[in-house]
Amino acid sequence: MSTTALVLTGTLLLFPIIVSYKEKLHIIKDLLIATIRAVVQLVILGYLLHFIFDVNQAWLLLLFVLIIIVNASWNTISRASPVMHNVFWISFIAIFVGVALPLFGVILTGAIDFKPNEVIPIAGMLGSNGLIAINLAYQNLDREFVKEMSQIEAKLALGADPKLSSKGTIRESIKTAIVPTIDSVKTYGIVSIPGMMTGLIIGGVAPLEAVKFQLMVVFIHTTATIMSALIATYLSYRQFFNQRDQLIGRHISEDNR
Image 1 (tube, rainbow, N blue to C red):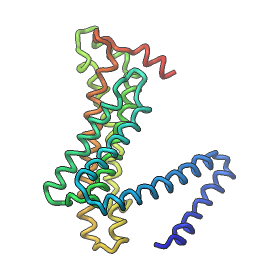
Image 2: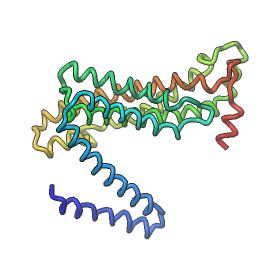
Image 3: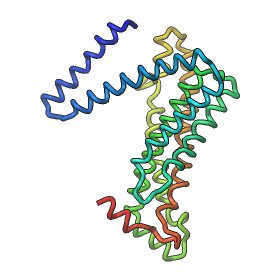
Image 4: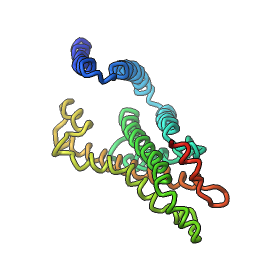
C-alpha cells in the first residue's frame, strides 16, 4: 500500500465528522484526537518494531513483552473502585499470567516461533484482551457490591466469611468480563471475518492456513481473557471488606453517587 493511498483512505473520516457536526454528536474533537494519537503511536511502534526485528535479541524481545504487560496493567487503574488499592500490581499479576501461559503454550507446541515478529503481535493481543476483561471486571465488581450490599451484609451477619458472602458478586463480575469475548467468538465465520485472518488473506496466505492461525488466536485470547478476569477479581474482592470482615459498603455507595 502506498502512502498516498493510505492518506486518501483517511479522508473517509470526513463522513463521521460531517455527520457528527450535523447531528451535534460532539465527538469531532475526540475523534480527531484519537486518530492523531493512533497515527503517532503506530508510526513510533512501527519504527520500534523494525529496530527490534533487526536486532533479534531474546532479552530485548522479553523486555518489549514486559512493557506491553506493564502498560496494560497501568491502564486498568482508572477503572478500579476507590476502595481498592495495589490495583496496578493486581492487574500486573493477572495480565502477566494471562499473557505468559498462553504464549508459552503456543511456543512450546510449535504453533509460533520465539521470534519478535511472531511473539510481539501475539503478546499485544493477549495483553489487550486481558486489559479489557479486567476493566470490565473492576467496574462490575464495584456495581455488584453496591447492588448486593444488603444481601452480603445479611450473609455476614449469619456467619458467612467474605468469600462465601460475595460469591455471587464475584461470579457475576467474571461473567460480565468474559461474555463480550465469548459473544464475539460466536460470530466468527458467520457475521465477521476476524482481524488476523483478514490480514493474512489480504497478505496472500491461503484461506485454510489463515483459518488455522485465527483459531490459534481464538484459543489463546479466550484463555487469556478468562484467566486475567478470574485472577484480578479474586485478588480484588477482599479489598471491599475491612480487617474485621465487614463490608465497606457505605464508602462504596457514597463514591458511586
